[in-house]
Image (tube, protein in one colour):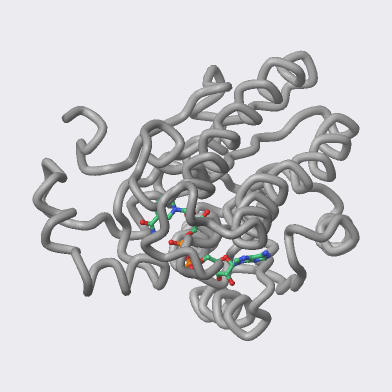
Length: 255
Ligand code: NAI
């Protein structure tokens, strides 16, 4: 049986971590060759090793999505290795605790924390699209999925710049979808709920029970459950889907 992205080339940023790694593995399982990008080189290599061990093909790319030259090199290396980029999952991201803003309300965030959050979670997505889109135009099309969040849809106390960045990702996604529809490039976003990864490990320990009580499914999501949506959105099965944001959240946004 052939996979739903058989023969395609997929680039995944943040591919060394939870959701990105699960997506990289799912792309490979469904027949794509994968470029796994992360600024944590060892983590990216580990994802690649898992893909290769399962009989897939992948390469490791390292770089920071906030640096234009790194992003340019990531796309360049993908093209050198595989000749094209059909699917791009712009997923690298960080949480407030990673910019020393844990528990801080809007007026308490430092300018430095705010700037870094926007740089990674919003500008990083834009820089990736900026590099990916011209190549997709040249090759006759492609599919992009950006990782937003339920934080792109609602406010979340003490997550100010994270929420702002994720709302911004949805805006970028809709705009690029309109601009490049005639180039056969589909651009969508995925909005994960509360997913079991390194990013949520500390929150889970501190107040996981309270969060889970709000989720209709009464559990966290698995990274692989986000990956299913991402790979489907990048496949031809989603040929009429663009400019959309899909919640994968155990029903949370229906509350
Ligand atoms: P994670 O921490 O497991 O993985 C994130 C990966 O991105 C890490 O491997 C990290 O090294 C990489 N990364 C971070 N900054 C980078 C940069 N500047 N350049 C290159 N790579 C960078 O986190 P997780 O949970 O897999 O998050 C992935 C995406 O999903 C993020 O955009 C996050 O905001 C989003 N998300 C996560 C949710 C969750 O509950 N875990 C919920 C909603 C959205």
